[in-house]
Length: 481
Length: 118
Image (cartoon, chains in turn brown, cyan):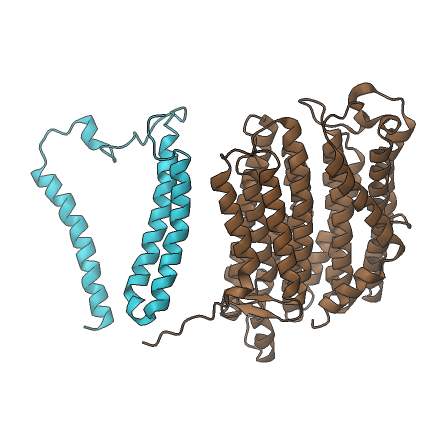
């Protein structure tokens, strides 16, 4: 028997090893003296360091583990987005945990592990590797959502998230089984070769595509797999909810994009029908349900579901302009959604009760800067011109029209108009209502979070005026596809 | 030996052992049967019980720790078969694998997962 050692190429997973080592170090040193800024400092340093390492791999297509992991420009861009989101989440968490005066424990280590999971998902070229990454991500998030065990809502949220998440993971795994049944391999790239030799079972591949979309649909919280999102976001610590509402979606969209690119030539229309159904249902149900929400976080959760509906449109023409448009939307979504959650964290200091939209009434008089930032994020989420959100929607709609899906764009535009109501209600309440004293005292040191929110708001407007630079980078990343 | 024959012998052995144990306990066991002797798990918990039954959460941690080492054993079995062919590479890989598991174990230890009395 001849044993051939696999080509591990440890360089290809260096950023992940760095994150794992620093995460594990945090586990062991969490009881040492010097609590406070040290642990979030180490966590952010690790994320920044891996964020610096990843671009050095740009353009090299470094493969590892017998090409189970390939760091192409596509994955580098997505991983940078994930890293930026995680960095923001760490900063928000630091503020949130300090205000609540709770012990941080394994909190930051779990965030680092979640980033590792997402990186593996994005760079994985084999469905089993992707599943592995998905599980690393999910297990970290299950714990993070229920991190504060003395809060009942938090426990409810984590049980709901865990049960539904485990179920969706099982469906994803079943999808992998069908994929293997159709092709006799689990590598995504195998589809292309199989099509050339026409050696695959079309029915099994269709089943596989549908099941894989289901598993990932849960991760991006698109209708009809969205029911966990509002309860989980609301019950989880808001800093975790901010991470949960952006980062897993980025990773899952990267995987969806890869799978759809590979599978759609083989399965004729089935994949695009699945995506159309998910997109239209998400836009309609997300936007209409958001109208009725009174809680701020719940409203943001439904708005997130609606935003995912818009993003899914980009998957309908992935090999033309849809891919870049989707990536542009995702990167703008980081800015505006993390920003909105960041403002919510600062405002969420009312003890022991959830934050209602009406609690914000008249806050602009006390907190003009935060209110202005929140208004910018809301305008951007609604997609009004001088902000990034407008161009994000504009590119997506343009690709859909070019691909011949005019009716979907009509639905999307109508739903955008509907969304104006609930986004602008927040602004209206902040600026035009009688001041209530509920939130007038925002305590503690808000310097870091204020600077971050300022940068996010500035970037939201900057990319709304000149989106070209980002689009250029993204097109370069996808040039090979 | 042909594979099918060895499979047949294996099946016979399995079925034979199971039947032999039942027959032996039937003939050698002392009569009369008490209530304790008729339940499926003689030393375990009652299989038919109300669901309000409470059990110590410590068992859960022990079970988790067991899973760590059980998984380790499963991999080491496979590794042991082919370790000669893999040479130094295989040896190093196993050290890395056991090392990673040890980190988890040490963490559980520090957190007090091994102390029964708190």
